[in-house]
Length: 176
Image: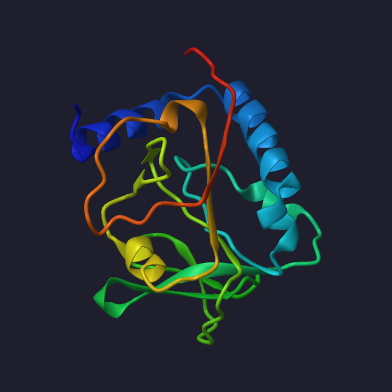
């Protein structure tokens, strides 16, 4: 079985070469699955993430006018994480190059879209290696979900500190 580091590298390479047309098709398909789900419909405060070019594209969720409070993460010292209101006019770039809210009031979401690079069939994920989400999820009682492209499903053993997501929304298989 491949190590987490090997899977992380393999999936990251695939994300970089994923054809734009296939990415757009799967993105629309997965976003439609997500927004039709009971977890999405029930949630009032949804935590999204500001996607990097290689990550699943959540742009459609930010563009849609919705009756939900959209929150985004902010990294804190000691690899801690908080969520604050999303305001496209109140963002700053973090030391990691991510766009983060300038707001300092932490808000507890009902549903968190958890980013990552790979997921196994039980919802455990391989993230970018910082452990921010696993730390936050250790004390989170709301719903968790991830959106992923078809090739981001991989077989691996989770580590004791890993926290699985409850819902996964996955694009249809493409060959490239």
